[in-house]
Length: 341
Ligand code: ZN
Picture 1: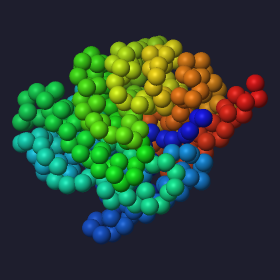
Picture 2 (picture 1 turned 60 degrees about the vertical axis):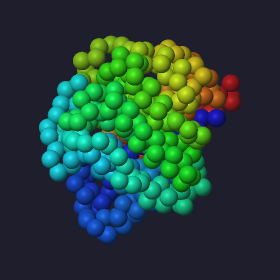
Picture 3 (picture 1 turned 90 degrees about the vertical axis):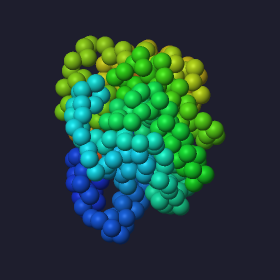
Picture 4 (picture 1 turned 120 degrees about the vertical axis):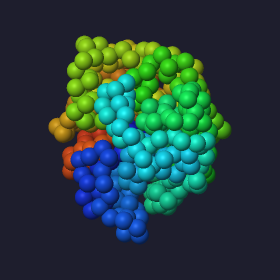
């Protein structure tokens, strides 16, 4: 009961990359960079184990950004000529690569870090990939001319990598789809179908993460415009509940998401965000246990998985370490409260 995990990303140590940034520059190159990525991956696996988390991940230490990391291994993408584009419905600008011809994998994307992580932990291992709809929203299309076609083209490629990750021994494959919370109608109309294409044939657990974004200023500013009740999930959850995806990871702690929306996910495992990634204030175990207790009103205990709200990439390293511990300690307390009733 209450198996703990994080959404995916963790801060990169200063010897690996610039700190406190969403698109950090690497601090090394060539073989030294490969070694630094491996060292950081092992460091974070140990930190997650030491904190007492049940499901661990590579902390996305080997990719510069959660979307562009995948795209670097895709043929048909021009990385040399990035263009400025408003992403997430123009919430913020990003320098994005361009799709210039038919997409094809150049080879494996995450074999190195997935196999390394698998060799060094006996815990369940989760691995994250960007979802097709979020990728479409983070590239400039100069070739396909149709969002749905482009999403399904990416879904096929994601599926190849996901099947290979499963063969590497990964227990959970999670697709990150923050765009589902921005283009809710598209998400329900075709985003979930593209996601299912990406997960086709997988026999390991499959998950989707939908959030209100990293704790960066553009996102906190956006959240302040969303009003008292955030009901975006309401439009997407019914389509997800009907899908073949096993688990849904979402943002709850300090959000304005009405928790009764979780009822729409009946039949799914729910990874409930009980750690705020937009604040450096570390939650107390009691706060985490309270948040789990509130979610328990709407999610059966065997389907509730305490998690973070989102990735922790842009956060100070020691804050992230303490938040891992808060997640584990708060979950332990929630279990005690439940069994002592
Ligand atoms: Zn997120």
